[in-house]
Image: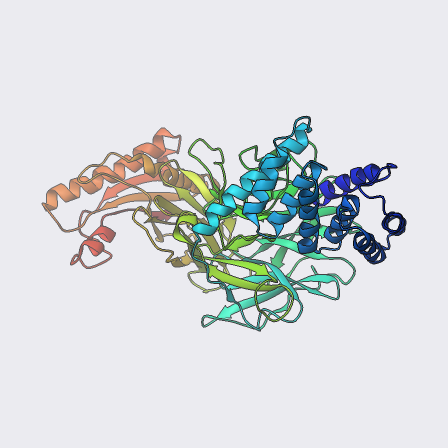
Length: 632
């Protein structure tokens, strides 16, 4: 707990003070019992010491040193109410006996949600001169906690936690839940007889099924596995392993990849992520290229800080501290980066809160810097420890664990609806299946999703070998292009707009890749022209690049670039427009050093529709640019 170190420091100071010859009492029996109590403390016999201190006070209720020692012992034994009573008796007997008592009692009162009393005592402590800078900063922090908590109690946020039921929770401890983007799989930690292992539950017909042991490739009988993060498609699991023989430090971050229905053996992430120090609590970004984690390595701002590392062509890059708008001189832990890649949830005992660890959210600004965190508020946060949570991809619900609510025993996993002002940006996910157009067998193919505005990839991965499936989360408010390719096949392209997308409804796509054969065609869905124009729009660049890469990988192939229109307007003008659009693509390829001998272009006007020209949607399908294999 945050006050433990301070407590023992003050305890040592108080013991040295009490060792002086003069006490606030002359009662010999009281002094005798007080001395016996100090001897019991030296021998770690704390219950006996408490009894002896109570006897000393029974002999003389004004024995201030005995009240101080008894308050310390009660706090050590987690009897906070008793400790507060003893320290208040000291203040009543002699308000200036020790300035340290005001800081001690204020700290404990915060842990008991006695914020007004705590604020009074902390402010009194700050009136004293000569206190160290460290203690002054700590007292100022406690005062901010009190002011925040008093205000938060008057303005509670909506919070209705729901226990996830007996298929997830048992009489054992369940905690650290994480979910896939489609909200159909949850992985969590269960502790049985001090051994922590991962369990998994799948959702079927909106019901969570009975959780099963994750895998003996990951779980071990001799070491603990916990603090995990799962990639959005459920294929990679990052987790914390401590004291393992293959580790670099006391706690390291490991990763395992799913192999069919089971998992491969995990491996320890190499430096610079893991060090001989302590690395834990990973959270992987939606694109799988940024890993957030907690470490106490050098170069931080406090005890435990949140860091991030970005994947490069040479592996994980040098970790970067998230900076002073996230990290404090105290502890920040349990990071969860939402799939929008710009909303970070974490717990901290350094930012103003309800006491101990609270949950916070920070948002990434347009300047690329994290903003000052927002406390999630009461009663999501309490005077106890809130240790972390994860959110669904749509941001509407959160999962967390607690032992303070009536559950099935110990820590249980709960879910609650996140208040709108605490939610991340709206995201959705693209879930697809890639198969051979002829055999209908699943294919492992390269999948790329691009932000069409800047042609920046937001997702790059492969569909699975076993099922041909992929899953990617993407933010709303933008236009995207989808490209799927595999050697020996024509590539596939698609585009979709999320500019006015306001819900978490996913895109489900089934793609059949055509083998490279003469006569087979590809619709270039990410080639764009303005209405009745034939100049290529900038958003077309990524698609044209894909086409050039395809031609480079298949140097014997010849293609025809063809333009098509709908049936609206003058036939002659449509014919000319289709030719000019095809020629624009042809000219672009030639200008980028594609051999002209491999290319021809042709306009077909309205003569080859692929849909009835009856609706705007169908007419849009007919306005297209294609390429066709003419020789191989």
